[in-house]
Image 1 (cartoon, rainbow, N blue to C red):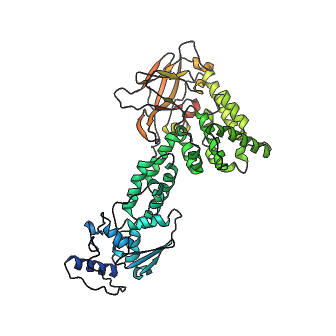
Image 2 (image 1 turned 90 degrees about the vertical axis):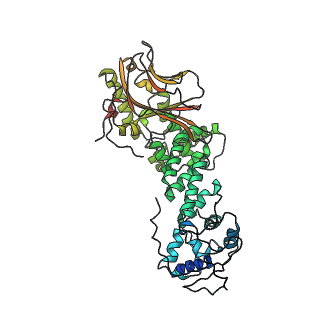
Image 3 (image 1 turned 180 degrees about the vertical axis):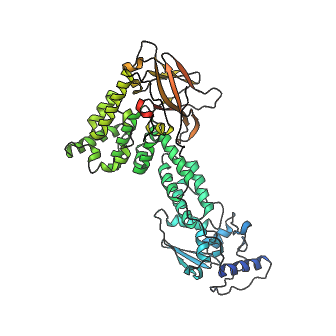
Length: 502
């Protein structure tokens, strides 16, 4: 096994920085009043608020005064008494917040825990001295209920957030710059990602700068997009997101690259016909019928050259066509569907034919100088599933182009093996005494929600096997493995692909 060279590093909207605290005169007056109350002064009559002074009663009820907690923050209430008195009933309010057709009678000392309100009340804004604030909601994800919960979070701990409300509350917390609430939303998203939530979590994490949640959702989709086989999930995947998924070598492909094309065909149909409902088995036939009708109406023009199809071009461009057309049934399907323009396919067929000639007549063994960038962007993606811990073996269609590689699982080991001597599989090139291929093998076990509970990755390696030779690729002995296990492989075997682009 030879060395693999790399000349490119691995590549794996935040909020604007908050303004520094600068308490204004009104805030200082509030702090002085609270300090006097905490010092044991007698209860005084309520004074008329002005732009420079606000007074408070000494006691609000069972929760006590507007107490200050550690670190200069308002002490939040866990019993509910302060929350009910100050937030729900608005006792001792010194500012009214109006938004979304509702009004909240609140307190600046509590609101200033929010970076949004702290800047508003301490800077040279006209709202600094106003007793009524009209809020405009710039984000359609923010609704009245989410705003109520976000404002209420300033008065109590903890805040209960159901997964169905986390996006709306995250949007509100991001606008108000409530870091604790944003962190709580982040934790809930980590715990509840699933086929029903992953896309909405991904889009909101991308919008509100939660890069760790975005990466988590992207990995979930790479693991599950082709294993869940969910029509609802396909409907929710946007064009930009699908482009990112299809371009990735991390995509867990079940069977071979042709299955990526089939999945894209279903996805495009659902994007164009979002009201389609039917059994899973009817999706592909209905998609084929729709595309055939579209082809007749466009007088035989390839779908991706039609007005409806041009929007999908950036996604289909990331199909690895060299590995789609490498067996006869797949090539026939591509030709019959006529989704892909001939101008895309002709150079791919030419390169495949020349690669075959080089292998058979020039006796090329395979890629010689391989770079990580080539493997990430050009490798063949294929996969399978080990349902139980029992011996099995299989081959992937398309690898016959280069050699007769068999994948074997036995005794918690995964082996690569060449077929027995004089029993070639596929083209005559498999009879060559030696072939070279760059590969990576990945294993993953997913729970019912699609989250990985086990992973193992061999990293990229160069493989060179002679006839009847075998190689142990993965050893799972003494490892806590959960079945079923998905086995995903990336192969780079075309001789011309191992060269760094100009």
